[in-house]
Length: 138
Image (cartoon, rainbow, N blue to C red; front, side, top):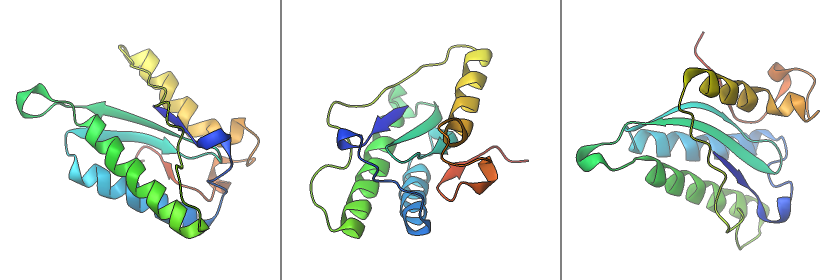
């Protein structure tokens, strides 16, 4: 899943406070939605990438809409308060969603998410990225 900022403005500039705000919003949302398992996340300057697996709960309802609502809602309020700007943080036209139906496609999307900030030339090495980056446990 990818979600872009309004007019692709660089609202997620690499900064420790931005990373803390986004990490908190994401962590709380994941904790409140145990049916959604987060496998990858990063936030280049103008958008976020997340890769989740959904394990529907009672009644077969997806946990992902609630996860995204809470995560993006908290992030938008926190980033808006930090910058002193009101209004929307994310584009209102929704998000790009990719469903992976086999292991190869999932692995490709995970790698894409993890290396995005290097590919875009924001940092030379993944370890240098000061923003939020959810990687696999080693």
